[in-house]
Amino acid sequence: MGFIKEFKEFASKGSVVDLAVGVIIGGAFGKIVASLVNDLLMPFIGLVLGGVNFKEWKLVLKEAVTAADGTVTDPGVTLGIGNFIQTTIDFLIIAFVIFLIIKAFNNMKKKEEEAPTDPPEPSDEVKLLTEIRDSLKK
Image (cartoon, rainbow, N blue to C red):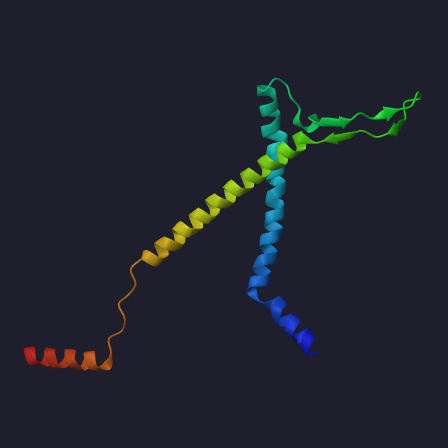
């Protein structure tokens, strides 16, 4: 029974819930960035570079062997360089956006820390001395 109680305490902590929300949002954000790279950036980059389709850009190490009837008897060996380039661009975009978000968050936090705070409440002795001073002025 102690194990179940410990698990409930762990699962109900705010940090675990925050982590779960972060993972879900991160997954959705990754899909958005992948679409940005695959559907918008890479076709444009391919067009600028002379019509290169990066998805099909592969380095053939061994050609595929096909039989007379067209069936593949021995598959070829290729390196998917284009896919690697797209994945690298995905990573760079995600890393850059996360950098900007963390930088903005740190700037907000820094401004909150620099904001003036109310002075601390004076002690009883200070209050008494202030009353004495005020009564002596009268």
